[in-house]
Figure 1 (cartoon, rainbow, N blue to C red):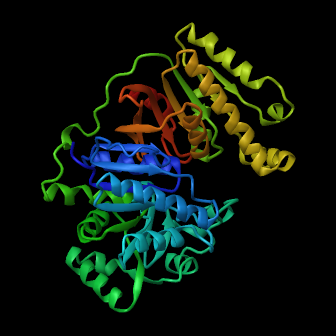
Figure 2 (tube, rainbow, N blue to C red; figure 1 turned 60 degrees about the horizontal axis):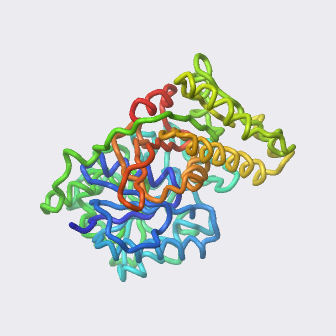
Length: 425
């Protein structure tokens, strides 16, 4: 069995799937694991993505988990590594991007890497070190109000420098435009100046392909999922990649389907509203959950009733921003979120036991809770449904396919995403 080529460490679940989607599009057979596998058994894949939940945990814990993932990926034979984080560089002045990048460089005994969260396809671009979301700076995009990682400074050089003892530099867009050789020359200059981490500008997919060429000899690359666009070409040029035509192939799965939505994002709200116009849905009320009402039982009964008529239902906890704030004020931010995640996870597990074989899940935290409840440990990544969201299938310990899953970040997907996802599964 050929060993994996590219090993990836992602700091959240849907971000891992997003990255895996990019690699499949580049022709790499890709497997995603949920956490660091306990077994050292080699997986049949060109790229492996280890999904952690380390974005907002204490920096020391994030470093420890990331190093465990790196050690496991090295045992799989991987020769290059990606540390993947959000395309809006979600972090605080304490980390976790800087501390994890430093620790991975130390473990790999290397002295330089780049940081590039650009994802132009979804409107994330970097110019002169400043991160834009659409046409506005990061600090004006709404991310400045994030409850856990408020992003109030769009200048990523400053943001990253506050998280690391390493010297942080910049590979500006005028260098990127000159091509891969110019980028490599700039990296050599930065290293001579003692720079260990450098923000790289990128405003288009073409820039990411050029960066991919320039970074082919780096042991570690850090960034958003977009940075993976230009990496498969390097392995193909070295005659190490031979499965491009069939990288996204997945076998067919029969059986009932279920749609679950726990995100309160604008995109997911629109997707829920579109579904509810003509299809059956059930709302999970966090206040009812807090009162101990049998919401989970009611939701399961509702889904089973419609399954008898070959109808797929949506079970959702999506609310407007004002409704979310009201619930959080009443219950507390942490409790409100956990109540909803636990309820949706329990619903998913019970309906799987009733025969549901395909799950569409909206929301990063919700997706993580659902796959844990379903005891999913490994995913084979299939074709893209929408930018950043592929169809996937769970792989059992015996290698057999068991469930079809579409797991999306809250802000991703078109208004009709749920229907497209069901067709793709």
